[in-house]
Length: 292
Image (cartoon, rainbow, N blue to C red):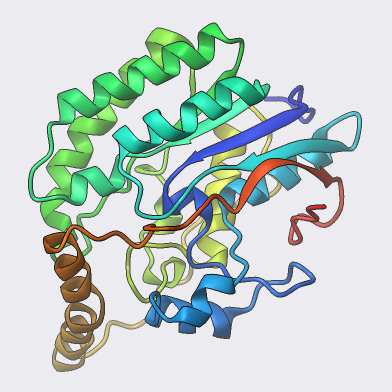
């Protein structure tokens, strides 16, 4: 593995995973856990629209800047919450080809897998076409597997779909020389403290762990040798209390999500990319994405 990055420009494509929900930061770039939790509990509140969110892709940009001989990297992020893979390929990939970055992360498919019906072969084919185009344009490509959902109520029903999609993804990466973030294999993410209250999006610590996994996927040395070490386990909740917690999650998150799907609405409707043009990330504290 190398400690030096060769990439001078990095572009993130995808959905909420790469946009950065729910790691809300203050104006100085510091994580705000209280505001992050509130945003996760009230994702459709009008005030949430104006919050500044940061995720693993922003953190990766800062890591790449710190490892660059020039001490900086150009960074853009076109990811928008709620986007399905076909929309990411149709709307974001052409813009990526215009910007011509050294490195592109293309992470999508999770929203498709959560739908009642999905043609995994079709969306894998669309993903491969996009990877082929990006590679032909001279871009290095970083993909990411889906998370193992076996410990999540209800969402665990999609585990077999995620496994099939991951198999497609590894094949695509091998065939076209792409890099992969092995999110499925991240032991640290098997802890609910890494996840926001909606159980779908990551906390600041969860995003930090994925950023380290991305460095490893790119062949770079992680900052912390214990980056994938699990947290000290917590005592299990009493059964009745756990049932109450799960019921609250169904009421506050799963049911509203399913209702939006039935009405053809998405959390990303009318949203635009948070960073559609190149910004400069300099080699400063990686806890602050230092965009300008």
